[in-house]
Length: 238
Image (cartoon, rainbow, N blue to C red; front, side, top):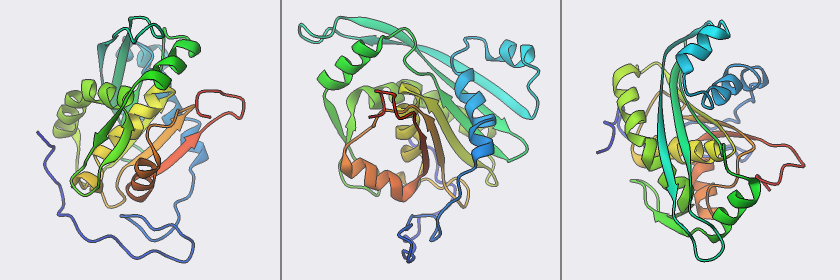
């Protein structure tokens, strides 16, 4: 079942002369380098720890609250003679950055999977046609979409328990985790009839592979403020 809509859906705004038309605003957002290199990055790193509470205590982290996590196993079936059967743990972390009043979700990347195997999975795996409430069919990489489905109930329950109308949803992740965050941020946006805060969801990823085709990218750009941080020599995002 879908998370209840906080605010009724309204028509998209007009585009401005800088080409930054989005559902939530007419102006271009500003990249927050400080947050991207501190709280958001640390949340992305936290998804790799199986005991987030202990990690926060060890690192003496302050300014975060209600940090919870879930680890779920992902099983990849054998794909012909190319990709062997494989398994790894998918992790999602939810928390609140009190200083910025943001409710943040982070997702674990491809821990335990070689880059070669990851590339084979993305190359060989099919795509899913997904329709959100206010979008046409979007072509999404099936592997990423199905990983999102595995952690969706955790996100729904966390939002139900801790979200307040003044908060902003932020999704972060590294590598595979960034792609799952991309799918999640669009799902919880106006594209699907959700309204969480006046600015809608934000996405900040590190080394994220492309999560979908052109129709997905255009819809995502319209509904989600997205910042994709990559290294020029990293093969995963390119």
